[in-house]
Every structure is written in structure tokens, then in C-alpha cells.
Length: 242
Image (spheres, rainbow, N blue to C red):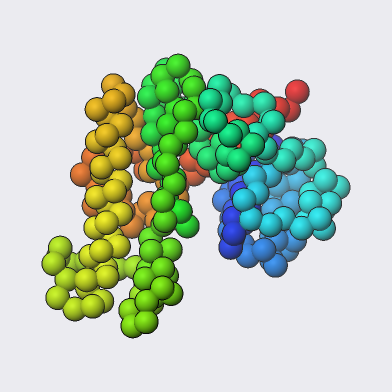
């Protein structure tokens, strides 16, 4: 069995895979990681290998604890990958984006795939039908846009995300909701349209923490998969076990 860990800026996500089947998915704060790891280890004593993807911080203590229990792989641009990486600066490519491209290579071979990860930032990652990773785009996520308007102005309030009822906001709050949410939707739909014009038979995957918030409002045909990154990590782990 495999344990994959996605270390984000705020939360860690742990998932246990039996071959390709996810048996458990768990989230925790950084300070609760060791307790979560103990629970997972006790529940699944047959775990032998672990893949760690860290865009946040993983302490030396946490890593040491993992290495004492499992054969541990840390994902980087030097890890054996299931696609050809044509990114201009591969050493700067985020490990989360590597995992997403790997899931695309596994699940949609010989297809043009655009993976949209709606999280702290919104990332767009494109894998061609030739199994070549070409790159994509990065823009601010929903929460970041609300925070930016509050932080960099004198009077705009800090709001929680909310689906706007109409396009034309008639208060400051509804105008902000319209600007953020419709702005993100127009951006995503625009990217999908532009990629579709350039690349035939485009498959679009939507994942990330805000995917559920956006999915039903997007006009384009997409596949929503909240486990896409974790599935990619498991696939990379399987490739590197030998």
C-alpha cells in the first residue's frame, strides 16, 4: 500500500492507495501532522512506500518520522516522471503542477489535456497528445482576490466568497462578489476557449479546493476530480518504486 502526502501552505492532505484505489483521504493542519500520521499508520499497517509533495513546509522532524516507517520519495523536477517535461525552467515548476500533469498522462493518454487547479492560486497546466508538458498559466485564486482588494485599498471590506445573484452589483459587497467570481469564471472559460481553438479534442479537468464552488457555473464541458493531484502522486510513486 502507498501513502501520498500533499503539503500545502495551510493544510496537509494524506491519502492511502491500495494499487490505484484510494482507501482513505485525510486533511490536517501542519501542527497536527504527527497525530494524523499515527492514526493512518495504525489503520493501514501494510503501507510500505510514501510520496511527499511539498509546496509548503515539511519539518525535518516530520520527514524523519516518515523515513522511519516507510520508503520515502520526495517529489522534485529530477524525479522520474511519466511525461516529457518541456517547461523552460523545470527546476522552478511546482511539484503540485508536476503531480497534476502526471495524473493527466496516466488517465488521458494520447489526448490534449488542460488541468485547472482552483486553489490558493489558479493554475493551468497543459499536456499535449504527444505526452509533452508545455506549461500553462498561474493567476490569483478566489480568496487571494478578495484579500488583495481589502489589503490594497482603504475602504473595501474583507469578504468570504459568495456566488453573486446577478452580474451588476448594486452595493459594494455585491460588486466585489461579481468582480471576483464572474472574473474567475470569465477567465477560466476564456482559457478553455483559447486552448480549444488551438488544440483539438481538448479534455479539461477541474480540481482544487474551489472546484466545487465553480463547477456548476462554468459553461464548458469539464471533468471535476477532487482527487486528481493525489492520484498523480500515487502514479509517480508507482513509477519510482523500482
